Image (cartoon, rainbow, N blue to C red; front, side, top):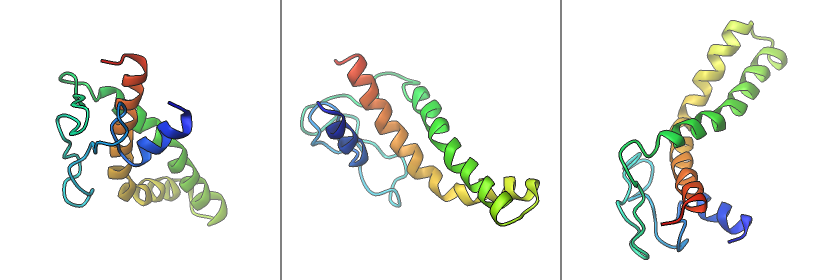
Length: 119
């Protein structure tokens, strides 16, 4: 699978094996982390074991650092806020994006795991 196909499947939140089956049951507004247990198309189990998504938590943290830093720098250097206020403002401004990044990190983690250790 090419990198563009893999990235496309991650962004569309599709199964890493068949790239067709949906990983999440519905939209982010209906069920933030409501995942299917298995792919409806190829029967791949999405959560292999308890604690499986611990790696996704680290991935989510890594994905969150650059935008928060950019928000803080924009508020501090461009808008002229005090550093402490810019730091707090950056974190608060980023909060609405946390559910999206969390879902994206879980999907990316499933794809990474399948690429490294396919079932």
